[in-house]
Image (cartoon, rainbow, N blue to C red; front, side, top):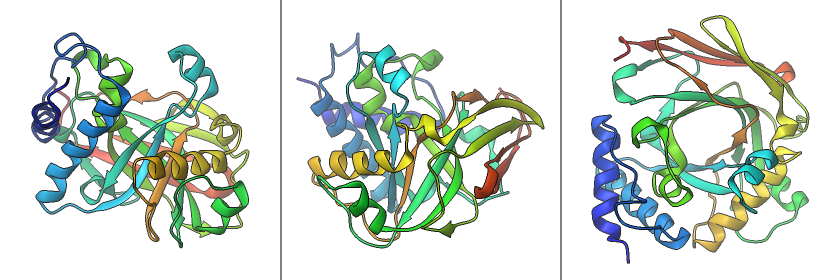
Length: 259
């Protein structure tokens, strides 16, 4: 059985120090999903003990093609904390990341609790606002290589997120054209329809998966619904932006030199 506390402490230290570590699988044997989520929860507890607060959750493997590639039949999820929030247009320090990548997403903000098995209509009724967003993912493992249990334990690679202007909850998010730029070069284009065919399906999944872990999605929380395209490496870039049709624009700049 995995040493939950020791692995969580190792992952937390890797994130704090922006230092890559060897993946857990291979050192500790295969990680069950139950153990992986227990490690994730324990690692996030270190952040909360340092003063961070839970502010939402993020969804992963929301591309059906990616699920097939990974041999999965369900999504994965991670926790968002207050120290991961980056204001729209703000600068981030490159030194806090190991080998960051960025992906375009849709985010929702909740106005009511949500947990367990809910319908699409019930999920929508809990939404206060919607927005275009960017998630910065940064695996704590060497060479961005991991097995399923590794990535779940590592908070689904989540590292930081930027949310654009909040819009009415009635705003359509089902098929939003997206173009992501890195240093003004378009690197990825796609549609929010790539998020499970409809991003609200990802919110339904978030309620179900978090609820199964005993977590209720709270009013005021941000739910990142998954990548609309493949992730792009940030590398030595100085700026990233996303144009998301009627959802508007969101972006950030990067300070510091690449390692």
